[in-house]
Image (tube, rainbow, N blue to C red; front, top):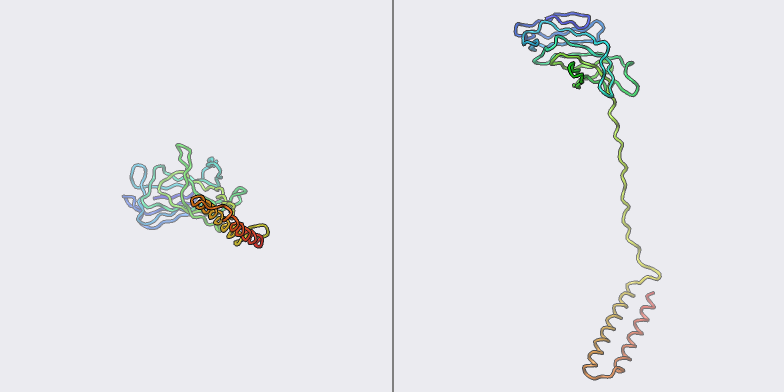
Length: 231
């Protein structure tokens, strides 16, 4: 099988069933295109017969890129309809000087152009920024483009609001009521309740209010004195 990589031709061993007999590589004279076929690969044409030739040529003018991308180079692989059981390898070069401002060699990608729809589809590839090449696999023939892709946006961390700790209010001071004052209020309430009960009992038994009033007054004076001291 004849393999023509732009301006250099090589010949690959292939049997009547399209099986490649040994590993084969050919590189264009400028080093920009390298084609690799591996032993055991089955290479067939559109009719399913043994593939008789491979032709790789640059595409000029360059096709329109997908939105947000830039086509650095494009190559057409022929014949149409050729397929490979175990993909063949391809390495294409790019000129970093052609990369638009704002794009990086780290974001070079390979895309396949559908001749009928004009749509691009992206495939995986390995970029070598030292040699300005990208290597990928091919399982069918079409136009393959080397594209500069926009860099992925850097995620901006969202602001995190730290909740303020809940601070317990300080103990009451000055005009506030202390523990002793609260106890005094409770005692006073009990006394008043006792007075109410006492009045009810006196009414039931016919006793005079004056008998109880003097004792209750003394108790109330004592309670007020405690409240005054607590403040």
